[in-house]
Length: 96
Length: 510
Image 1 (tube, rainbow over the protein chains, first blue to last red):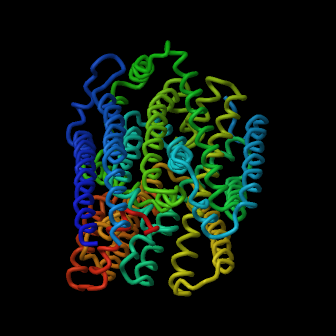
Image 2: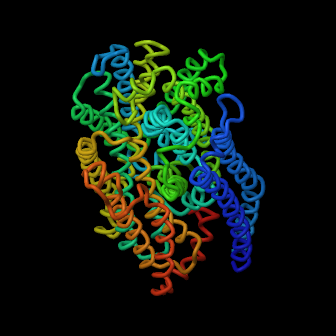
Image 3: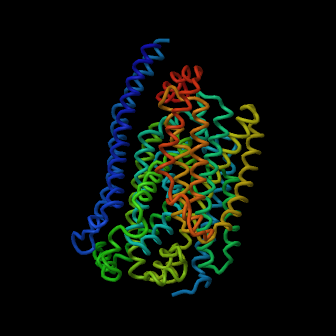
């Protein structure tokens, strides 16, 4: 039981670290984008080519980034986390 | 250009068809709805793709389709701030909330907050937070519905709002979560294909090059439409709205409730990946719809029909596809509103009956039969409330109203949810204080904001100069939750944390 708890706590910490890191990355990217909107409107208004401003380009990039971050989390949990939980759960049930 | 209020046969036919289809779904679902698990959580048997579509259906509301297209059409780039903000909340949902929520609770997010705390006080607070979010979200949907029917069928705004309330009531009352989920799925597919067709018809006029469309917009209205402008004029307001949108998603009761409809944590997680792909694609389409309406319909014509710009997408459909396509798009928009209203009502009913009635008044000892009666009575109450609120708030921009719902969700629900799952020393008093502060502070600051005081009540000045309070209320809810917890240690809550941690990973079975 103690062993189960210790292993679970380690796994929990690993998932929490990844989750917080990805959330922080998303927050930094989005807040950065919002701060540019708030404080440097002319920069985002820079027209890169007819019809495309830097603001619109970055907006599209932010939308794609959100999806990429989700896929990083889903791939890690599907490949590593689920197996690790299954291992701990099996040992836990055999042990009691 | 059709006059507002001129009846459109195809729109009516499309709408009647959708209502008929959704009532058939409801009838089938009603026969499968036997107990509270069916009613609130569709029996827990929804697949990842189904739940992804249903999440997208719940999320792509009238605000997304009508409101954002309108904001982009009237303000250009500024409208996109909403599109982007609505999407960036999803990584937060999947990384921090979805799986633990699935494994810890049964029907509402209060199940999770109350997991190792005292049931009654936490649930009353959490239900208050949920209901405040649901109320503001409902207002936005109802206002969108009223405008749309007035434009298409020439029915009075008030009557239109009542019709939406009654049809939605039928879904939720008889079909519960099973019907609501399937209505969401049908609606998500309809909305995505409708928006895609509309975008393609717009792009066909610009040799399928979005940049040519944007370039034409800046030719007609100046390059300012491609840059941030008036709408987010104040830096603090921009940041405040941004944070509310980002963290609000993870506190929306009707979205959180969807994670109980899937069998396990893995399905919950994968369903978010599907949902985000669908929603992201849809928001990219809103860029094209908004600028398309700006160029092809023209800002004066959009303003003439509705000052808030909510009718930009339907008007665009008429310009590129004639009356028939206007009818189709209008029916899709209507389906969208109905489905979202149903999801919201179900979440509100769960807060009232599962949290307040069953777990507070009856201390968790109500029979299945009694619980179903209370759940259905709550549904009727909320449907009546949504009709009244929809009529009272006529004329507001729907995307803005949804922004406020997100501010409440981010300040009232999100901090308590995170602290309860990840911080061992969180206590009952801390949870109560955090949720109630988040709800009340957000509501008070919204009341004092220029939108209510100056735009609605026509006062000359107000003491709180920002339109969205999220920047202040979200961090303060966290701080209050932590400080109050430290002042009121709760040994039983600390002891319960080991069990909570085990169940977060193993699920409720062990």
